[in-house]
Length: 278
Image (tube, rainbow, N blue to C red; front, side, top):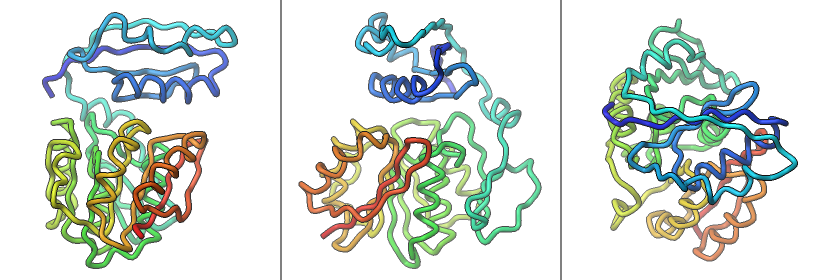
């Protein structure tokens, strides 16, 4: 990966709910990756997107009821695979699906996903990816065309193929996610996943039975109408990357474009919601 990043190290008192709120606020201004710490948060923004006044729009940092301290440094390009390998632990979802790396022992579950994450988001450890995996485990995907939007590692696309989905498109705006998805598709012997670098503009004239989007609230609301146009009647839309307090706004945006709320999962204030095209 050739992109340098600026790393921010935030110390938070109290840690919760400050950490959850701060992640949402930072994502809105361009931060892309986060690592939760016992006493705060690491946050990463591409150096090319950094502006000295970027944090000025985050009034939460100045709130008197929280003690928020931070420092920053530029992170040179590195082998993120080595970074993840030192910290990546396998996970098991409801005894039905396991996510592990190549250096872990095999795990006997109906679906085993092998992921080399590098810098990409989506190992199943974050609440949003975990819940979307749960949703996919409960959906009949046999013969369904699937879109994994904001695919990160491609882990959701991989599970979709293992459950019989085909064809599957996986799209991410970041080049390392696009490359990582291709690598992980090969690792899992997937034949139906097609990875693309780009955004929702790639969906013109595309139609799917299932669309999965794990992004942030602002991007989701901006693109919900595009997802609706790309979803077959009776199709399923799975959305995550937002908080419980955002669910009403997401529902309202979906309702305006013939997407009917079905259900949602909640994990530590994160939400993964299911909608149907009517």
